[in-house]
Picture 1 (spheres, helix red, strand yellow):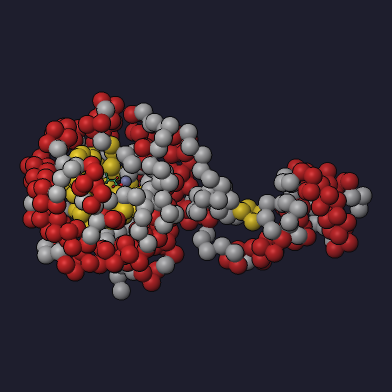
Picture 2 (picture 1 turned 120 degrees about the vertical axis):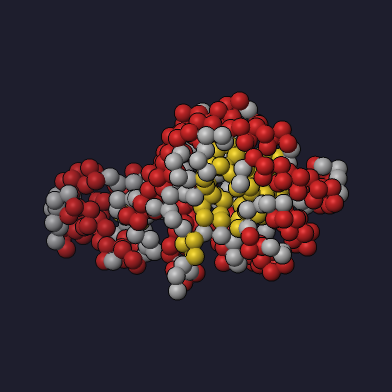
Length: 384
Ligand code: KIV
Ligand code: ZN
């Protein structure tokens, strides 16, 4: 059975860039955008042009250099926003306008002091207006995670009629459970007439740590676009992490969905974004964290030395990490110490290893991590 493609919509440069205290300039954004295209993302959300002259400039410049990937600009359901977005996209080979409005009771009442009917009218008006500027128009129903499914279906139906090509169903507050979010997508697939004319998109925030699980649940239930960021950066607890959703699909072939991402570039992209944004990646971050392929306890090290797959489900090379790391700590066993010593030229027999291991444990208790260049010293102190 051939796999269906899930489009990767990268919003590192828009939603990701909304991280407090972290601003990228146009130059940084151009570097990242170029690498995102090399990575194979299908859509780059380059910014929110009406928000500032700097963002307008970034979207314009990114549109000039990107060759094959769709370049997208965000707008509210406001004509002026859409005008500015279209202007910023004028050099894009494949432009997309992303427009929308809040649809949850909370947003309708407190943000807009409005009602459902007026929200539908504004949504339809915005999509029709954007459609006059570009062919590819994505509609977002902000806070769809907390929007009643029946109303969501109604608004989706109307914006498809107005020309929307993609329907973004954001779990803006990261509220949904995977099953709930999956059912929402399924409900839309089954209850929106004309749904075959549009792609459903997942846009999940990570407030409960469920963004990746929710996006995958959405894709399993028929969504064919996932909106995500490198390293999962974004507002509050962040967005769905690009590297995670890509590797979930790669590792679970039986889902029969995949992306066009060149996964070998994931680690370098992660570093590039982290450096340009000045935002370190947490060491235990899945796929790209410094410890994602590091083993420090004796039992695990022994297994990995015998066969990497005992404790690793991903080949580090597949995501651009050169090799798994055996990290020597006081929790390490003899197997790891012998392995590391051999790598730097010491072949220890069993008796020698027993002695060196005792010195090693004393050293590791004091120094926590033991580096390769500590090993000769430890061997010398052991007087073998
Ligand atoms: O989280 C969200 O709802 C958004 C929309 C503006 C797409 O980022
Ligand atoms: Zn968002």
